[in-house]
Length: 182
Image 1 (cartoon, rainbow, N blue to C red):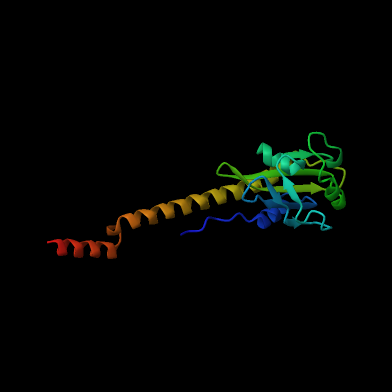
Image 2 (cartoon, one colour; image 1 turned 90 degrees about the vertical axis):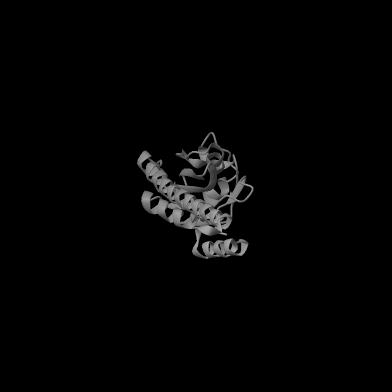
């Protein structure tokens, strides 16, 4: 059995931080229930306040991005309307102000959420968010291609099991069966 491709949230967090030059990037992969995830990858963190923070669908900025299925951002997290504020303590501990969250959607489902943030009073600009979306999009396309390759390989292998004459040993076995039948 071929194992499915794995999304590297760690790599994606580093790519987003490098592509956007944000002060901190972080994220996590959704669990099997897909209703929550734990932030377990961080780049640029000053504290451990975000490590293993459980984010639930619809709560905070990442939970909102997960629920809506598209990127969201706020210029000042602590004063933002339109998000819940369960995670204000962790955000304040890291000194984050302007924050974005991008869901990583593959094959119709969200697999992870990636964040980026600035600690200063400047809002995340359109270029920064676009660069982050491009980085996430590139990783998503790579994963979708890998999944399609795996699907096709599995389909091919399943077809070969059903038709042993497709390989040399299978053809020889079929000849032997035919000879025996005669």
